Image (cartoon, rainbow, N blue to C red; front, side, top):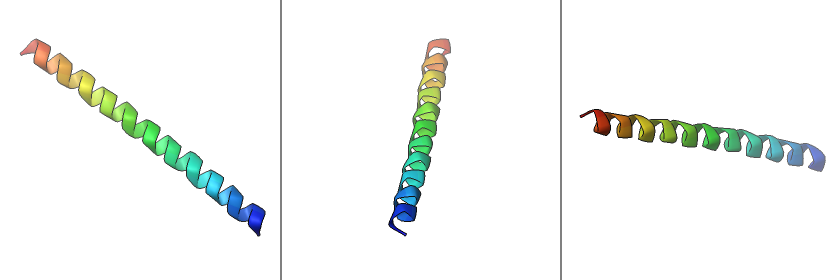
Length: 41
């Protein structure tokens, strides 16, 4: 049971890390588009 809990914790950690990576990627994308927009205008 303890091993199962640890596995779930690792799974949740990996999932949250993926989510944070995705969020940071989207934020970078937004920043890039904003910069491009500012440069164009």
